[in-house]
Image (cartoon, rainbow, N blue to C red; front, side, top):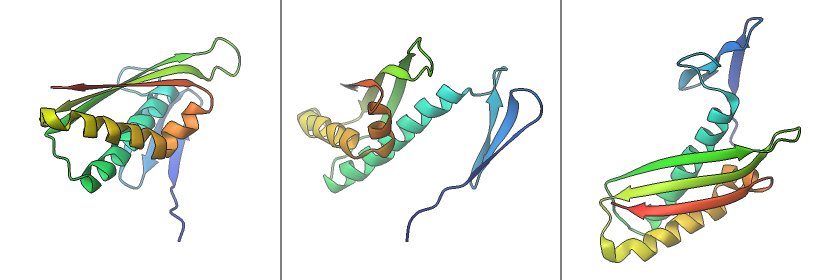
Length: 133
């Protein structure tokens, strides 16, 4: 059976709303404490990439303590202002030094199999940097 997703977004007559999904809510808008559309897109990229990375790492029987990720995007000046460039940085903590090549392979496979990464890569140059702590 195909996996279905559903979200609901409620706005008044301003760019000030609430995005609701099955497991939580997020404030949307341009005010303090609210997320803008590209915040959500880059957040979706990181969460999908990490979930894919975790699946691969588990299959490869690799262990680590934590992972911090950032995404920096540059939008085109033309309309529509799609992303021109995105850099993802992953900082993996607590991984055995002798396993770094295997972790790099896992991150490469994650970019290959992550659907959000693949979608954004259709319009944007993508870069992945992997660091170890």
